[in-house]
Image (cartoon, rainbow over all chains, first blue to last red; front, side):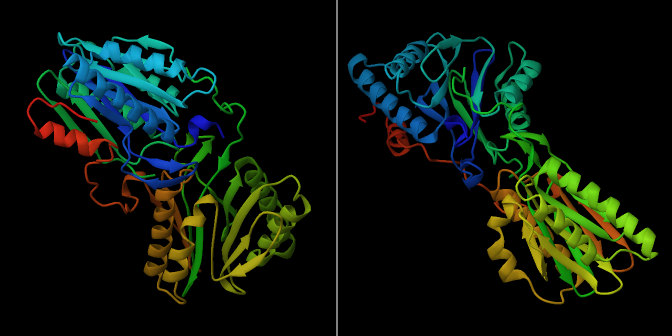
Amino acid sequence: MSIFSYNGAAIVAMAGKECVAIGSDLRFGVQMQTITCDTPKVFKIHDKLYLGLSGLLTDAQTLHQKLMFRHNLYKLREERDMKPSTFGHLLSNALYERRFGPYFAAPVVAGLEPDGTPFLCGMDTIGAIETAKDFMITGTSPESLYGMCESMWRPDMGPEELFETVAQCLMSGFDRDALAGWGAVIHVITKDKVISRTLKTRMD
Amino acid sequence: MDLSRGASHAEAAPSTGTTIVACTYKGGVVFGADGRVSIGNYIMNRASNKIAPLSDYIFLCRSGSAPDTQIISDNVRHYLHQASAESGEEPSVLMAANLVRLINYNNKDHLVGAMLVVGWDKHAGGQVYGVPISGTLAKEKWAIDGSGSTYIWGYCDSEFKEDMTRAEAENWVKEALALAMTRDSSSGGTIRMYTLDGDGVHHTYIPGDQVPQFTGELPFPNRDPSGAVLAAAAAREGGMVIG
């Protein structure tokens, strides 16, 4: 079995009108056995920046810890939070540093730039970065997720509509994936707050 | 984006990574299966029928390789039909089980079929036979098989009772399947359940949203490794995090 489908994940991030949403499934499993259903794969870096990591969960957790460390040092020196676009490039560089022994994780970065514009980018396991204005996905069933997002996304959605769209794309996408699902969590980031909701889904 | 993706859908073989459950009760047999067919981690069919009729009152619960078990069921249905035409009687469950077993045994190098032969005949009433890979035949009071069965041996052992009522037996089968479908990624979707009691065949189809769930209300996940630090920082004004 591929190292990227050892644990399983489904992550969707979308941009709306002055807001972004990012969500992941909650399954933690080892190959075909499900261990827990309370493991989100989306991590907060700061109030306006969230990071989703699919792939091997141990590498996702380690990458998150290393990036938190980098961001904390940045905050001490710069006396402000890191811009999402900067963070994306920081992550890309950190992944390419390990070009010949990579972290088996594929990230999605979602956040709001200081002027309020949404920022979305995704990378492969060695840091090839691509930004998008609409959506970014990663996980063990990318075809399902792409299909849903391509059909459902439209520009300038408000926070509530964006939540609904991300929720439906994520749920319908991972319902066809044996390794992702068992609940979902979605964070909607606007300029004054973050609304995080858990979804109750089918548990198979 | 994914550089080292494993076997593509075209290369992996479809498998009924599955849970199948059968038991005898006072008056007949109850048996059931989940509905998931997967190719690798892609769910190719989320509502498949893994219970094949071999005759009017004999059924085959299929797990393992999807094509192998389909061919076995087609072949045995044909043999049984011929045998009952020659004898003039309804075929016996034991004969059906032996036919399945012989195909498994004589082709053990090529076939991967772990099946249950369940039925009702006038000689011995309701019967459950386990016919796992390689060609064993075991008559049992209850039997389970498939990848999801590993998660429910404890449940089945502790909850099975002899001479259950029809309702108790159906509940036992349904709960066992639902528990396995929760934990095993290659089982899920829907539950199909049959009850045979000599009066006829009663089929119950349980769609995905009516399958019993065992997780209750989930609390908001809070497994962020640096969650404790971030939560404390959020409480303070300014939010400087000394990590």
